[in-house]
Amino acid sequence: MEKYESDKTFIARWVAGELSEEEAFEFEKSDAFKDFNRINEEIQKYKAPAIDKRQSLIATKAKISFGKQRKNTYKTWYAIAASIVVILGIFTFFNATESYITSYGEQLAITLPDGSKIQLNADSKLSHKRFLWLDNRSVSLQGEAYFEVEKGEGFKVTTTNGNVTVLGTKFNIKTRAKIFELNCFEGVVRFDKLATSESHILKQNDRIISSENKIIPQEIRENSPSWINGISTFKERPLKEVLDEMRIQYNITFQSKDIDLSKLFTGSFVHNDLEKALKSTLTPMGIFYTLSKDKTIVYLQ
Image (tube, rainbow, N blue to C red; front, side, top):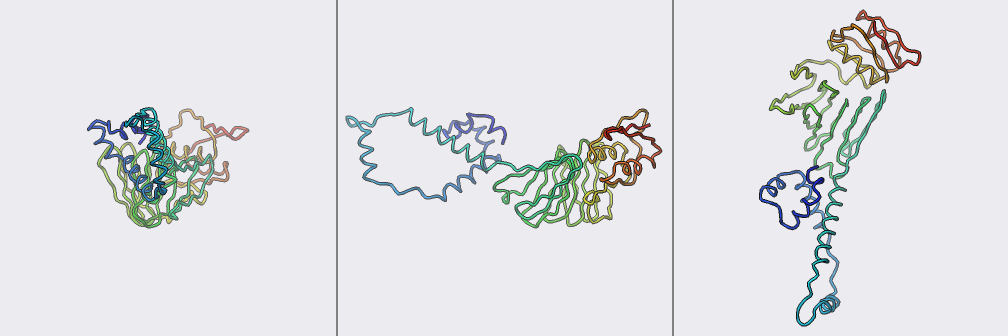
């Protein structure tokens, strides 16, 4: 879609029928072409105003001189340009997006047009089409979110790691940097990994974790993600991943020397008490730490 928006002459050439066969073939297969068709269908629903035949005849005669109608190329192309502007305006209007963004330590509850509910975790972004969304229930996610999806014609979540498709279910997606994790709490979801033909079907209590381009299946026993209740929980995850999550919740940075951050951690930390979170995470790993006076830097020893 971005291609047709960035090429300022493309729509004009399409209206004028000047696209090459290859360009026309590619355009007719695109989502943008489908959007134009939907817009055209909506426009056709509106009836044109009644025409005053007498006034039209007078106007036509005024344009005729010595038996020949005057050519006005400038007005013709002006009308075409105006039409293109209107089409582009409608196209931009119907493809406007709605975005939701959370900062450090912040959560946000979202209700979509179909009644589906989403809880957005800290340092995350979710976006979807503002109009005609029910015709294509698709959202884009960066970060982490918990979904309770209403039943319908299909629901898709796009991420940089791959796409998750569902019908009606409860699930959690975490996609941060090199981390991707999908938990299914109810129903069935399908994960399609980008750049490959690899697909995974998850049912209730299933989890997959993407690590070093490998998909690791696991089982879960929870009914919902713990972070919704202000607790981050981990099972045999690298310490670096745990500290990154703590950084997101508390807006802090870690400084360390000769600390093995690849060691696996199993446990949890709370989101409302930094000292308690550090103690419950670092002490079991045998790591000593000091906190700066402004509580923004944690020094690991």
